[in-house]
Length: 419
View 1 (cartoon, one colour):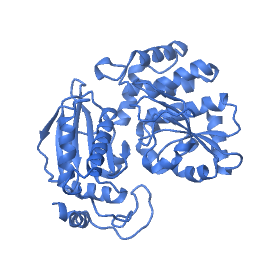
View 2 (cartoon, rainbow, N blue to C red):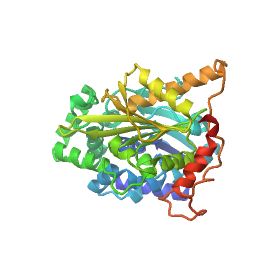
View 3 (cartoon, one colour):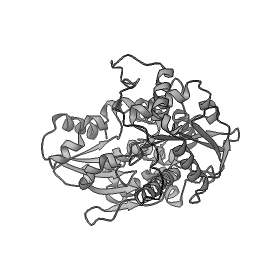
């Protein structure tokens, strides 16, 4: 694996030849997505026989990777340097595509966001475990199976097509991804399927020297849930997926109780700054924590300065039935944040994301047919970073910083028409 990753880095640096076959994970870039990109690209490099360099690409900027603390820990366990990884800001997919030098395989997602819609013609294969959203195409084989971990599907491919590449290091990667995504293989968590269990058992059988299950899970889980020292922006970016369209939405998983998150006195100003910086119209926040008996606790919050937008999203999620989130309103100390306890603790972001997409589709359909008397209020177009300078992780310069209160006031003035 290390030699393969080094060859990928060299190839991207030289950027020569007929082009690249990029294996692209999803934009949350969780541990499952990273492992699937690395291992499936490795498989293709050994079996495809094509003249293009196969490279795994993590779908975040390089500066964001330290926030994925569980992935950082796994690489340390494998004695692999993060310098061997390639990130979205290190390879210009649009330029490659326009030059006819790009092929794309999607892992751990089955449709590109609208911001990457121009890359659709380059997609030649999909392997995923989320709800199928992709339209059928004779030129793009699609494997979508609702299992706990996409790494389960990749492991099956490797065992079937090239079992010789499955050494202890690669097995450790896949084993860790299945274990973490399936919550320690616990049926009560509602993630693991018989297919996941069969693959997990096969890896244990082939590699008896794999780490002890309970210890590995606890170490990865602790790293994943660590938010010590993170700013609000970093917590939002740690595990975020975006939905773009007529409204732009960020859906972030927060590894902290909602009560603790809402305690920040400048929280609304910080969320406002985040929305302005990245162009989001509203935020959906799902928290995950555990009780003393290790039972999952999920809570939900919706942030928007548009009262109409916030109310419509909240009502849609309250009334959702597939699945029912079983939301119970709780007090929020912030006027622009609606907060809920989530009774259905099995409904993870994997289940929430389609609901948000369905809401946006329904909203667009209603607006298109003119059924609303007044178009939904949106934030006025704002040039990127016009009120906010660089990301705290960038370490760069930029215009003088505005105080949180100044940002809050600026944001509020922009939304006055809806308040």
